[in-house]
Amino acid sequence: MLLVTRYFLLGVGGFNVGFLNIPNALTIGRIVIIPVFLTAVIYKRYDYAFYLFIIAAITDMFDGLFARLKDQKTSLGMFLDPLADKFLIVTSIIILSVYGWIPKWLAITVISRDIIVVIGWFLLYLVSGTAKVEPSLLGRTTIWVQSVFIAYVLMDMTFLSLPVVYPVLQWLTAGITIISGLHYIYRGLKLSHAI
Image (cartoon, rainbow, N blue to C red):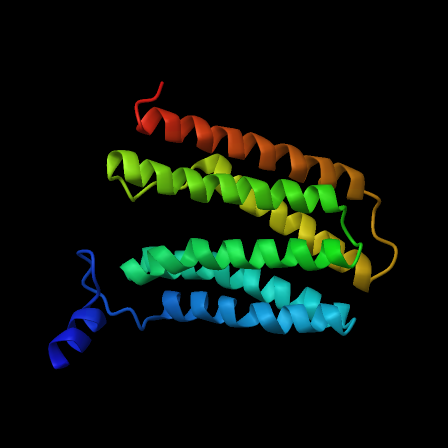
């Protein structure tokens, strides 16, 4: 038991840092924020929902920064960080579409893209044995655009007199989500030597 504990505290996958570090704590904090965020939306505390979403977005920025600057990359962090991003974005999109703040077709677009990426990763693993696929610049940009769109919607629910940029952000979010999904399909086919 002591050897197992020591193994996980030292990290797995060749990293020599314990998984109980600042970047991983920030990532776990982001996951913990999600149910509180959902509760705030359900009980129409849109101001709280907005602040919680902003805090979660800031933790996303800082966990990666800490991991690089302090050389605190761990296998747990590399697994949890994109998972936390996906949970935050997808749950936000779903709850906002359920309550009519964003169109349902946009929620379907975002969720479908993520399902395609996950299924593609699984198939790539089965075909080639490659489990590690680095996120592309387009994939990171998609997360950023989706986050900006959600933050704008939450601001619009909370504050008044915002600039009328909703249609632009909505179509930009949909467009980059679709393009990113197609790009990941292309990368998956290329990595599996299907093309």
